[in-house]
Image (cartoon, rainbow, N blue to C red; front, side, top):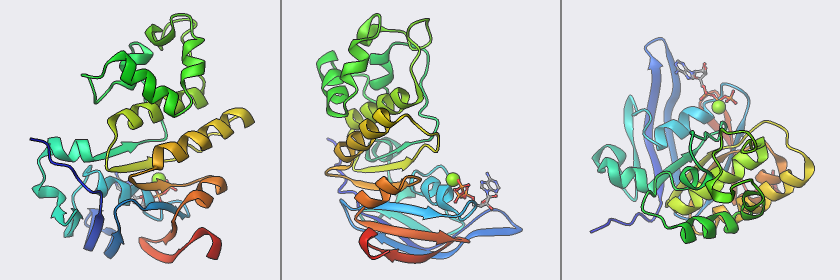
Length: 230
Ligand code: ATP
Ligand code: MG
């Protein structure tokens, strides 16, 4: 039977280096309670993406451990880990295939009704329905081309359908037009509800909806507070 994660993340005395000559995270500890939305901000090279990659087990710590519900990530079955922790990257990667296939990535068993429900939840249903073949539109074919904002919405629908306990989001830096900016922001709030979220935030509006803002500098957290207090 399926193991259900609560989504509590901890870094216990984690040290991480990509190679011997430079430690990126020095003795790093952090406690993220289940359900909390974290906005991670800081200058370029501070270690934000590195932290995200340790949570998604793209890399393992050099020393110390990262845990999910108290369990070392290295002890989790890869299948459980993939179900519990989902990372959405800046590129909002779409593969060649239909819009429906792209949303169902990670949930190949999903029905079209479930796919549509996920798209509706994040406000993507309207533009998808207006595509030449709707959900059957090939994203790489003429007329199936989608904008940066629409690509982001498709990746949000994919994450919503996957319904992970922990969502990691490396927010796109690309500027969007105002209507899609607003759509994305609304979609984000829906997507964040009832799960733990770590967002590498580039928009002030995203920082504002977080429960907690962490400011990183040279692999350390230099501020940890609510958005209002910062
Ligand atoms: P940005 O805001 O530019 O995305 P960041 O806070 O995400 O920055 P990281 O990408 O985590 O920063 O990088 C932290 C440090 O690790 C930087 O000094 C970077 O050069 C280094 N680094 C990142 N990825 C690698 C890698 N694959 N191999 C070696 N060093 C790396
Ligand atoms: Mg980064």
